Every structure is written in structure tokens, then in C-alpha cells.
Length: 196
Length: 257
Image 1 (spheres, rainbow over the protein chains, first blue to last red):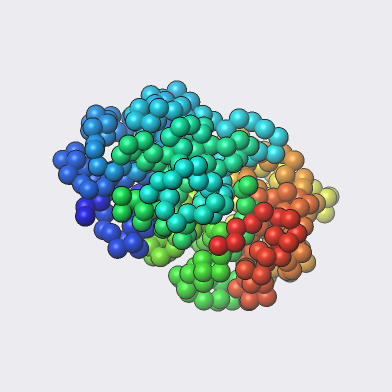
Image 2 (image 1 turned 135 degrees about the vertical axis):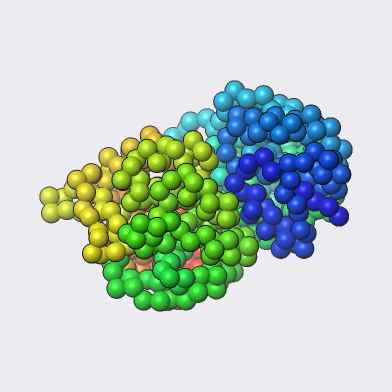
């Protein structure tokens, strides 16, 4: 099975690669369209801001390619946000694969932004990506923008209000937390993705 | 609910984890990767590695051990010490660190915080603040605390610096209360509470943990997001699983893996 990590400049790309290695998968880092198209699984990691993230995908000529993929695709953190239609962060048009708008956490007393740390996952519907996940198991989040819950939400997390922690629409999947840094829970979900 | 974080801090010197008392007289505690794995297994929520001599020696973090840690560790970790440019930070983040923490170099040149936030996002940028109460009762910032012979007391007030660091783009503040560090008499709750009132980003308490009650007090009284400690974990005086069960019993939200 070939798994590729789309090298769009995300700084967590090394961590995701190591997490896959711990699961016995040696993923190639690539921005080559042919390699991405030929892969069995495609992962779009991402740390940073939506605007530069999309700009990088455009520069690499990967926007239409990403939209045309038919194999399982996983966006991680910013990668998940880039799969959505639009992000409030820098008023950025994203890939439009998951019909949702990425919004900044609303200011509330005592609610610190970024949302940083371990928080519980609440499964919302059955999906192979969530196999073995129990309600309340925790994952590691670091983000200031989030996707409100919607019909594509597989698992939600509460921070001031519920937001989408895991989404899926067709072959496109997203995890707002960092599975590569979420200990056994993260490894389980990454393994589920590899087995889709 | 977001869990409060328990964060073992590993001071790194010459490839070893060391611990001093009040930032002095360091003794070796063990290998970096061995200790990192031990804490991961015990349920630490995050790890912080301070290359304590990088800044006084004017060098950047050795990225070799950062990569080794990143390969084996599946919880987040932050690296501090001698990061003085976007390039330094990029090297550490690409080696696999999740966050970088800047301290002395940010005091030399506060614009560094803004540059890091612009390059990587605020969520990658931690500002470490070493603070001590002066004779006049004000908390002020210390610089180059990794080497006592080079440590400088600055005129900058701690609370002013915390506010400025946030404006510049700090995504998290670690407040090292030097007066309580290493002596296990409890976190400096007064200083943490004062900092909390003006800190809108996550705030991490550092310096002074001796008992499980000290962690509870920091979370409940000072409302910090995480508590960092070194010697009580390295020595085995407090075991993380026991600590988390205690905190849970005290009504503090924690992650029990």
C-alpha cells in the first residue's frame, strides 16, 4: 500500500510521517501530482494558516488534483480545514470538498484561544474511521479556527460550543486534532484510516 | 471538556536530562529518549525540553535529539533553548517538535515572537518567562537563567512582558516562578493569579511543585491550563497516574489514558 503525505509546507509533516512509521507504513513526502494520484491513501497534514496553506497548494499546482482524488484522503488539523469550502482565517477560499465554513472560536469569558490540549471526542455516527473509539476518549488539539458541527461530522468536541473533530464526506476525511500526537487514540484512528 | 495538562519538563544539557535547584547546581537525571518514553507511558500530556545552555552559549538547539524524540514519542512536545530566528524554529519544528518556546532571545528582540507567529501560527509559539520578585515587591523578568554567571535581572516587569508577548503573537505563556523553583514548596499562586487575569492564551505554571496538592492549587486557585514540573517527576516523588487520579477526585478535568 502506498501512502503519500502531501508536502504543502506544514511543519507537522515529520511527526505524521513518524506516526505512520510506528504503524509500519513508510509514507513518502511528495508534492508530485503523479505520485499523489497513484497513491492508495493521501494525507494532507498542515500546521499554520489557511491563506498560506492554500497559496502553497496553488503554487504547487495541486488544487485541482486534490479535488479530483478518488482514493481515501485525510486532512489533519489545517489540512482538514483546507478540505472545507471557505475559512474565515484570512478570508480564504479552500478546496470545497466538505461543504462547511471554518470559523474562529467565538470569544467567551474563560475560553482561551488557541484551543490547546487534550479534549474528548464524542462519536456522532457510525463510520469505519471511528472503529474502536469510545465516547470521551481524548485527542490532542491545537487550533484557533474550527468547523462547526454539520451533517458531515463523525465526531464532535466541545470547546465553548461543539465543533467537528472528525469529518467525512465520500472519500474525503478530516481530523481537527493531531492523531500523530494523540497517543494510543491517535494511533487507532490513523490505523483505521489506513484500513479504509 | 478540555483537560488540564500535566507537563514534565526535561532540562537538557550535553545530551542528558539534568535538574538543578533554583536554576543552579545541575545533576544528571538520565537519557533524553528514555525519560521521554517513561513519561509518555505514565500518561504525561505533553513534554517540554529546555536546552538550558543553548542561549547562554549563543547556539541553537541540537536538532539530532529532537528528531530522535519525535520518532518515538506520540504526545506533543515543545523545545526551548537558543531559538533566535525563524530559521532556528523551522529546523526544530521540521525535526518534529510541535511547538517552540522562546525566552532570552525574545527579550533581546521581541519582534522574534511576531515573526514566529507569522511564519508558523501562534499555536506553535510559546513564550517562556523567567520571573523573580525584587526587593521592591515587583515581579521582574530574568534573562539567560540557564547559566547563573550570565543571568541578568531586567527592568521589565513580568506582567508587562506577558501582555506584550501576547500582543506580539504568543500562543501560550509558561511562567517560571524562579523564587519557588526546585524547592517544592508549591507554585507561586499569587504571581500565577496575577498573570492569569491578563493572560488570554493558555498559561502554564512552572516552578515549585512538591506535592499533589500543589498541582490542585495551581489549577483550582490560579486557573492555569497546565502545570509543569521536573524534580518531583524525575525523582519519583510523584507518579503521574496517581497524580491524575487525585486531581480527578478533586474535580479537575484530566486525561486518564
